[in-house]
Length: 292
Image 1 (cartoon, rainbow, N blue to C red):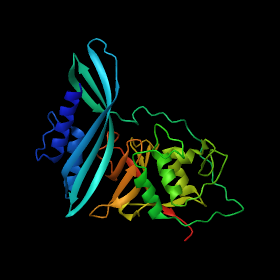
Image 2: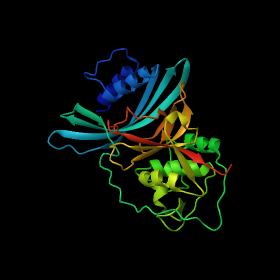
Image 3: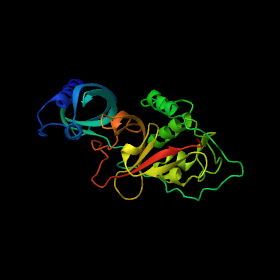
């Protein structure tokens, strides 16, 4: 099994730098990534991947399933500039009588059920919270922890918004609202607000907050600065599923983002190569506001 998975992974790596555009016996996701880069005058110059088997299921009716994780690195060239994009894929392979017959990426959002959280009006406090947002420190934190988990915080299976909250807090955004989970933005004593951990709650908190952490919505991604936030509604159904932080810009000034859940760094903001992407996707672009 290991040898077959290794050979399959090597083919995917080779596909990243191949000039052929056929999707027959190839990875659709990689072709989407290449097509997206091509539309932005970019290309993958070099790719590298390391796979690690996580679980091997028991054989049943000559079928055995294997879950494994792949760390991809892409060296991307765009308009004479270079950057490295990284991503951690969680994949499921199926073997029939010892032969690899199926391999697919696991979409962590596919069966995600999030308890509906109340949205309450923000309340002004008597003592106003003022702060200056340190974008550099927020980005440095995003880079430090993009593929690991700070033990000072609780982590979650769907960890994207928790990770973004940590980045914002590292940038000096102040917590407030404890212990009311439906107000403010905080994590404390193994408890947390909805806005700290739930993507849909953060989407509403950022533009609705009047003090402490808050943001203004902008109309286009190129208006965002480093340390700003993008929220994603993959299905276009009004409930936002994912959150990322801007950590760099590409050659055309478009955001590159870091994220958790599917751990990624320097990924193009639109997520068109994501297994969660649908044609109905909607975005919200938020620029963090402070008291400068």
